[in-house]
Amino acid sequence: MKYTILTLFPDMIKQGLNTSIMGKAQEKKLIQIEAVNIRDYAYNKHKQVDDYPYGGGAGMVMQPEPIYEAYKSVIEDGNKTPRVIYLTPQGKPFNQTMAREFSKEEELIFLCGHYEGVDERVIDRIVTDEVSIGDYILTGGELAVMVMIDAISRLIPDVLSNETSAEIETFDDNLLEYPQYTRPAVFMDDRVPDVLLSGHHKNIDVWRRQQSLIRTYHKRPDLLETANLTEADRKFLDK
Ligand code: 6GU
Picture 1 (cartoon, rainbow, N blue to C red):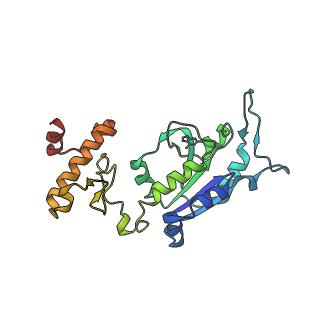
Picture 2: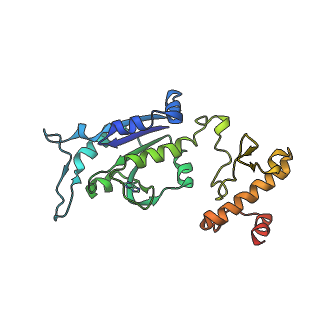
Picture 3: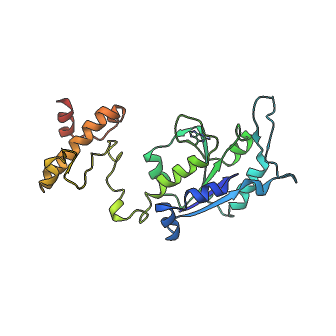
């Protein structure tokens, strides 16, 4: 997967994704991250990339030309152009289903806005997807891009090791994950549930499924509306 990020703060992206699993994934060439500085495509000698909003009002608006030029610099000639994701609180809420869908692409371009926004005309021309990472306002799209790249990349084959596999986890059936325990078996008089020490794999699976259901019911009941529930799950929840 190749990610190209159009941003005013390329170092923020580079540094933020240089460590841990994202750093390893880059070393192993499973993902490639290119951060393009929009300011390099500024039109005037002061390297200015924003201006006052037409019609007045607070703040500054990012001008269309530098963004368009930055975009053109990364687009190769050909009939298939990559999706261009604009990070904005007005976008479609990002979730695991979207992460899975994006992870199947060969290349993604992200546009990070700043200030009060981006001139609408360049959004109309280059953006294919508008995405938000939640109902709150960030100062810029950079943190949101890092969140998306992390969530997408861990679904790409071989980015996670077997030990950290993404095969079974929270949201796979739209349910939260069951609780986990490790040694010691007793911590401050609190014992690990007996079933987990029993070695009885069938019982462990049943217990874990029930824990997932209980947790989801208490912490995120909204998820149960669209969860993949079996007949046994429904019986258990009815009790
Ligand atoms: Cl994607 N961008 C910005 N600037 N703020 C946000 C956001 C994105 N998602 C939530 N708040």
